[in-house]
Length: 143
Image (cartoon, rainbow, N blue to C red; front, side):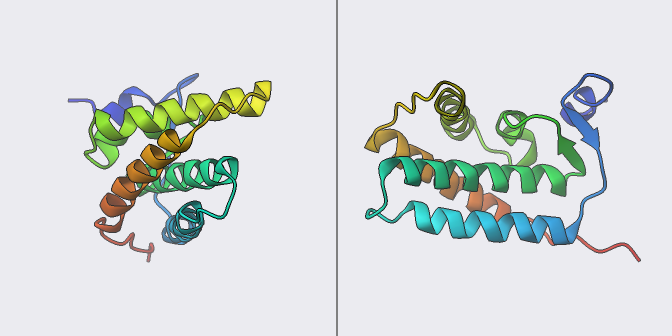
């Protein structure tokens, strides 16, 4: 039986098989944890908090994908694969996918339409991702 990951690998597809890298995994998590902590700071602008939380979530989801031995060719696939990388359901990945769309409109069209609610939902989703990523076993270095 072919896995969801294997179905998404190949020419013109969004994933590429690549062995996990312990140093890369640790770096992504370190960056994500710092960003998530900063995203919780109410003294920062809402836009900054959104950006920090979104990038923290992306880094954690990318780390989970890398742990499974795959690299993404586009940003949003890491959120769509959460049921397979971290066994997280739609209550998490839908929030992250929506935030990805909001981020893209802000980046490419200059219209970052956010409010306290979406930032709070994003931080909550990011915490759920962080909890699952922290349960993953360490990646062993090749001999």
